[in-house]
Image (cartoon, rainbow, N blue to C red):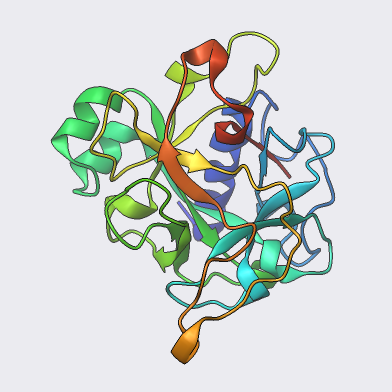
Length: 235
């Protein structure tokens, strides 16, 4: 399968799971023209919908470097910082077979789908995926990490915990490095002011970045998962 076909296949998995049909059927005009139909826009159910995502996962200041935070920012057709493509998609059991996910994760989620999503400004792949710098723990921020190296860049599409009522089509995204299966560490965004500027701390170390996406223990039963832990995709 060609690189382009793999990217489109990943986009198709995400959009199909989100209830949006096949890749390319929903156009939110939320990526650069250069990235085109390869781009996946990941939005929070707390702030938007497939038709109007409002805020989407974006690389902070657009810099392609390990450790760069991923944040929620308004959709844009001109800012390449929001250009996200699929790196890989498949069953959790496939990722486990390839050594990226543990046997315990496979026992809990083996029949579900999982994905890696890669930063690709103007459609140019960087080899950096949204993930975690360490094994998932409470309130750890999402950052760019090397794709295909560890469970920390793998996101499990947790349809088993997806709502079955009003929020149908949205789903939790559980990090593949989670070690808590009663309340797994899931992608979380609750910040009410995602457009405030970020800053650097002493000696240039990155301080808390407003609008940064984090992981937190998944709360509630499927019909009561907080909106800040539910995600959808559009294109």
